[in-house]
Image 1 (cartoon, rainbow, N blue to C red):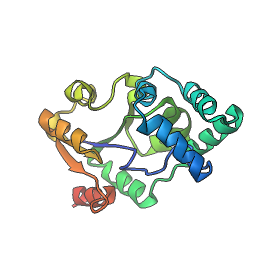
Image 2 (image 1 turned 90 degrees about the vertical axis):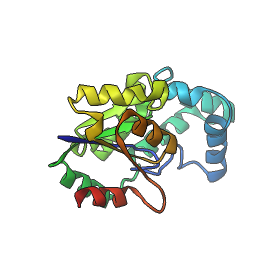
Image 3 (image 1 turned 45 degrees about the vertical axis):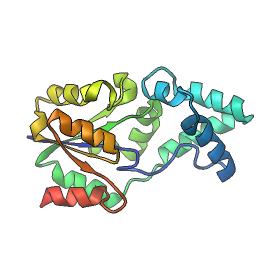
Image 4 (image 1 turned 60 degrees about the horizontal axis):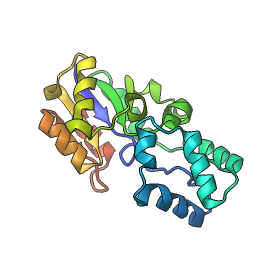
Length: 196
């Protein structure tokens, strides 16, 4: 059976952590964690920090109450939006594909987002960098090779849908086929193509 691998952030979902904070504060959090040179986010995705560790760092850096920040963070993880049409299309494709969610993500994804969105009902397996201790692009995409081998599939029979050009290129170099998710060609566009 063919394997379809789907990315989460920027592909299946566009919501951000801490998005319920006032927009100015959300921007400060994003700048501190995602735009500055620090390695907090990479270490968080690779299983070195927990969500509690990172929320503590954010609360100290921005002078925000930790408990307030934590509760809001959990709520935002649990209320991320995924298009219902996309999910029903994924369910339809399950008869022809093993469907795997492959994400560079954090412990909060397994703890709060997957159960709240019932993602296990739609995907045969969820591969999260936090648990694997490595991200998709490290070691020339070794994670992809390991996942495909674990599933008893082959890269030549595997398709990746991802919004990162670099990740798609790495997957192609391994022998797979990638579909670059963009504003013009969102995930539903590529899923519809597979169905045809």
